[in-house]
View 1 (tube, rainbow, N blue to C red):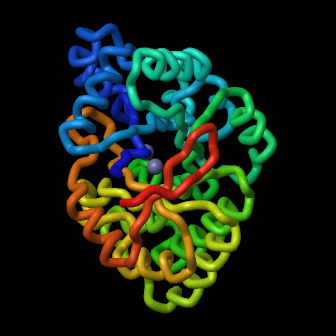
View 2 (view 1 turned 45 degrees about the vertical axis):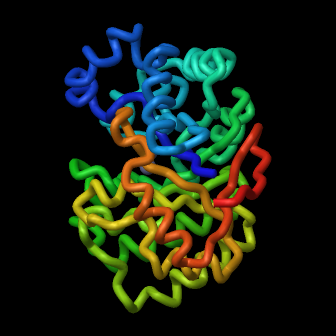
Length: 283
Ligand SMILES: [Zn+2]
Ligand SMILES: [Zn+2]
């Protein structure tokens, strides 16, 4: 079985959304059953049986005050309940769609995160470390690299990834080696720290995703790298499959590469979720 458990119905940023607007408007908007159906069709064309729509939490006005970054606040325009209702409507129409969310790990907002996750009938919650305080790991306009440099960026990222795992808030950690996105690999001196975090992730019970999105980024590599996948497998960490598509044509993109990497690391199963309950299914 194949799944795609990391999808967005719209691109990030007002400019990109404006450019795509005509595409979803003909279906009745980005959260219409017709537009969601385009993702389901794209998935089926790549032999994917089930998808999860995991919109960024920063898209919802309920969380506008969670982060001081002006980009974050400008993005927070939609209502979460209406979004989740649209996904439930798609499922009621017979589509294999899970209600998900890509939740940022924000250390000072643990209680707020817990309350928001309890407010909707989520099937799957991704946890993402996109921010180190006010600095962004993967947003080129607010880069942590200039201020922190590679070694501190990676070290602080590992601290936050471990804390996110230990929080128990998330089902899956998204793009686990994200700081490589712009082509800055992990400094070898941090290999031991990475292995400690992998053990912490294993102890927490959270899954990690194998995402083809990195192949479309400057790093031109799967998230995570094959040696990370092998270490996750050795530690007993379960996995999901993901494309992080922000438009239908990227759903399950480059899956032959991702599946080969999972098998190469020793994985024979992936994790399915239903109302946040995981179970293993054959890959
Ligand atoms: Zn992300
Ligand atoms: Zn995403």
